[in-house]
Length: 154
Image (cartoon, rainbow, N blue to C red; front, side, top):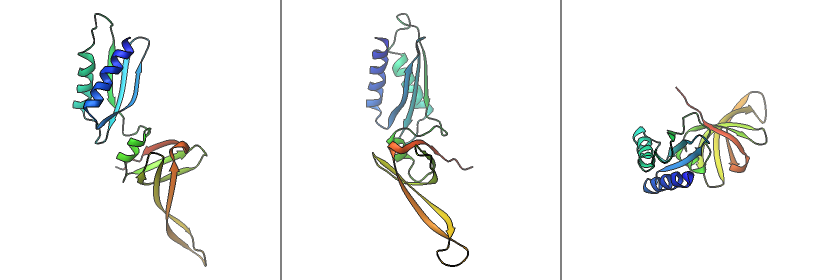
């Protein structure tokens, strides 16, 4: 009953705020509610507080004591949903596949099924000595992505 109530409040908030989306939602046996959000334009502290209020103000602690934590997906968190890839087009990603291959490149496209990475590589010249820079492109299905993270540059 408690989980249904929290789920309904969370879904109601997300319907009213379509740029935000749910990454993770758990309720531990000790009634610790943990919500992780992301947004098409990121998530602000104000939005986390609004989610917190939308849930906390509509639950009765006399009926069920609980703790509530609302957070945004961290910059170093792996990407999970296709929507997260879409918002990160134009950023560099590190992608590990289920086949053990690793890619690092610019995310240039994302659909519901695949992502496209592009990067430059130095390869031996086809004829003669030396190397030449070539443009590489790889389309990777979501089903083959083991882990993908945005590469942060400082």
